[in-house]
Image (cartoon, rainbow, N blue to C red):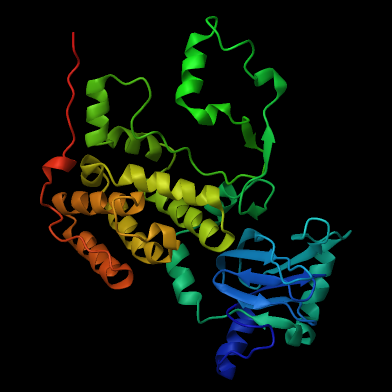
Length: 376
């Protein structure tokens, strides 16, 4: 926890008054004592008189709760993302059945907000101040995220969970018949891929983040020559990914949002999306040359994201695909002329994560791609 509800935060009176008058306010009701609660990188332990958070800076924010059991066990985080506007009042209430925050169940929510605004000073002692010790770092992690992108990418039901809810596929979609000569292709596939023996599950509608589709680095059904070409430089996958955006650099909003969904909400699907984008952007020298502004901003974003990776992704080894992708990205930035971007990222990784990339541009014959020609 960053702080308990009752812990003070150093701030002069003039600054506090300005933030109180212009910041947004989150009101929550009914949350049990000792529940873990957080907004962005700030976190609190809910006390008896806790009613929400004041002085929230305008912009994208991530709010979460984690219920605590009678023996001190804590449930997974469940939360939501919201783009707060200046002086906005947002009201949520505790859903005891699902142990999560939900929209206020009242006949006239706007009237309730009006009454809260009229009496906001009387609520001051019940509201925790947004912890501005973490604001600069949060702003660096979300500085490009717009209201429109947040609304587009968050789950349609509005709740961000560690894992999306899954359901079995309909019976009509299950394979039929024995795995014998009538279905040799399917039988061979199952023998080679044990995952296909697992139940076929899909996300419950509205529970998964709605990020853009990331194409495969190497498309399916490629010839051996095409596999070699895509493995060496996946420019076509980059082009396909960027078709979803009005401008190439708009992808950065989604990169930042997916990372914060994981960082704060522990969303596994969001981390997977972030890693798939990294895998595509890291393996195309042609894409760096074509989308220079995008890659300059991407390097800046990674400077703030990578030191916050989970511990298992921080190992500087060949077993870590993130480390390998970053090394490839640094090579492509360097050979494409973005030396300052490569240098900035390299220095940050050395100082904060002890990742060293000496001799980065030296070609190792064992790591060189093997070009395969089609045989006639």
